[in-house]
Amino acid sequence: MGRIGILGAGLAGLAAATKLAEAGEHVTVFEARDRPGGRVWSETLDTPTGCYVIERGAEFVLDGYTSMRRLLSQFGLRLVDTGMSYYVREPGDVPDITCDDIIRTGREALQLASSSGLQGTAEALLADLPDEPELVDALRARIEISTAVSASEVTAKSLHHIASFEPKPSWRVAGGNQQLPDAMAGALGDAVRYGETVKAVENISDGGVLVTTDGGTSVFDSVVVALPLAVVRHPQVTLPTNEARNSALKYVLQGHAAKLHLPLETQPTTSAVMSVEGRYWTWTATDESGGVVPVLNAFMGSSSAITRANLRQHPEEWVAKARALRSDLTIPEDASALTTIWSQDPLAGGAYAAHAPGVTAAGTALLEKPVGDVFWAGEYSEPEFVGLMEGAIRSGERAAGRVIQRLQARSRNSDSERTKA
Image 1: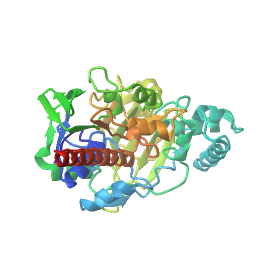
Image 2: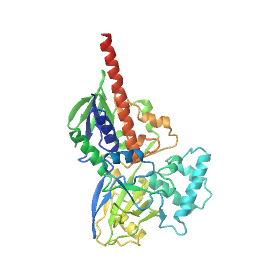
Image 3: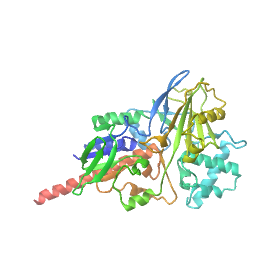
Image 4: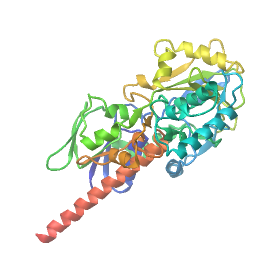
């Protein structure tokens, strides 16, 4: 049995820990927060008609989430249809432009990108579109909201997944997405140590890894670093690295996003309305009861949008703009808004990641290549589901698989040495 340290109890770290524990390895998970889940964070919001679960972090379960669905089944959890599509957003502040117009232009962009091999930035792709500037900007807003970075930075490949334009269904975990990390951490029991912040990780010359937290030091046979991208890059956290890994990290962008939740006086219908100017979208959706929750949800993407909205200093300005955008809804005058700005969270440093032009499958594989006995996991390293819950789970399970292979190889070598002796 190996002693494995897992740094971070988000979905990537918990996926790695779960797989390793199931293989019979001894795991210890260090989590700086007082809860599991990381950027998966469910809470409740009071409304005039009751209290409802809202997602302050990762929300939508999308098509192709096979690993997440498997874990949900394993822990006896289920998905509920939101009654609306994550991919379909009606522009609410640009006259004469519809969601269908944006979808049509988005598909044109995808065709154009495919013919050029999806090279370059999304912005370069937009510049080649023949459509009128207002429509192109609506598409630009759609991309920047979804990727949480500027269209001038993100790869055109982003249109294939996170900024897709196909009207596919979307789901959430019944009772809140937090149910999954809670269940996974619950199964690990005392192996999860809350309130411990990682300070340094160091490979030991004769094998093993020394982990220093604000709670002390520990030695492990191997360590899986499953910390958010911004934390991995933070100079106050000492982590082993090499030139190849540093080069691969240059193609990973840190996304920045904020969420807003407002109670409604009455039950609405499902909806999805986007602000092109504000670079945010709003929605109302169903929960496990089958009814539409009386909460207006909103998501703003990209650092520039958050700065323009003056969100850090005056979040109430976003509330006023959301009221104007969604004048079709009844928001109480004294509504208590709940705003979450992920860039201000010191344990996250931002939202999810995106990829820049030049990213390759070989490059993202380098992000997960071990450095000594230190292994890596995180949504930022996932080639297909970058930035998504599914990507976090897949990368964590891959890291666990590599650790198991390393331990098995050591065991075989040890057996061979004993035989020779």
